[in-house]
Amino acid sequence: MSVTILDILKKKAEGKKITMLTAYDFPFAQIVDEAGIDIVLIGDSLSMVVQGNDTTISVTMDEMIYHARLVSRAVKNAMVVGDMPFMSYQISTEEAVYNAGRFLKEGGAHAVKLEGGASAADTIKAITKAEIPVMAHIGLTPQSIHKLGGYKVQGKDPKVAKRLLADAKAVEEAGAFAIVLEAIPANLAKEITRAVKIPTIGIGGGRHCDGQVLVLYDLLGLFNRFVPKFVKRYANLKADAIDAVKRYKEDVEKGRFPSEEQSFK
Image (cartoon, rainbow, N blue to C red; front, side, top):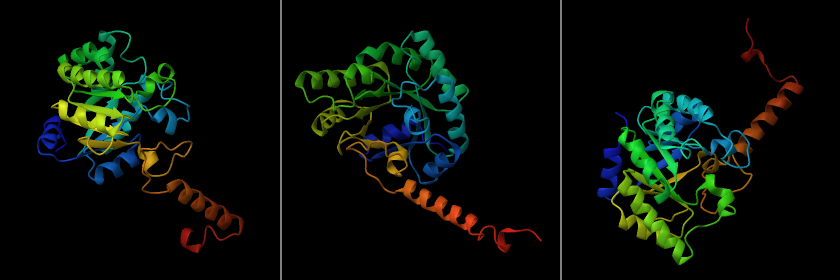
């Protein structure tokens, strides 16, 4: 039985932490799911860590659906959330509902995530009215990177902090079942977490959030173009993979591979 929204809300009520990671394909989604993670996010971060772009802006709706299908085939237990890409929900509420629906109907996701606070409230209302669960995302919103002027911590200024608190309450009222808090001061994340009834999931929001999320490729050491302060690396798989490929190359060049063990008789 897959993790549901009721399970996620219950965890907050009982003070139990929520775990969330990104995944973009079948084998990694299978690993994340078998490890017992609560929520698997097909993040638009795939634009950077899989496609090699400089920002999340380039990835398209069709590409996100493709990756959602790969992930949803692998996941048996976790909740699967599709990340609404840039310009898939900003043009009109009708288009937002349609694209959110594609994540469920074509991608096999259970819910969607979108960036924005009070400005996205009407969109969240419309999507949830269509019986599609929505996870909100405030603070550092990567799709707004050009407006924000870079990947900077949000909410240090008291006025911005007040706005982010209002944003959290607005998305809760609009029907969001959870909120991602990205790159905001820990004390502000703590205040927001106490102010709303729905779970907060931090990525650079400190330990007082109801849950945590990381980009899987950051956690595993597969992406090293830059490493945000909030990332903790639990492995260094890129270095391990390079070493394995070098050993393969050497074995082939020196005639050690294939051996009789890898040959047919």
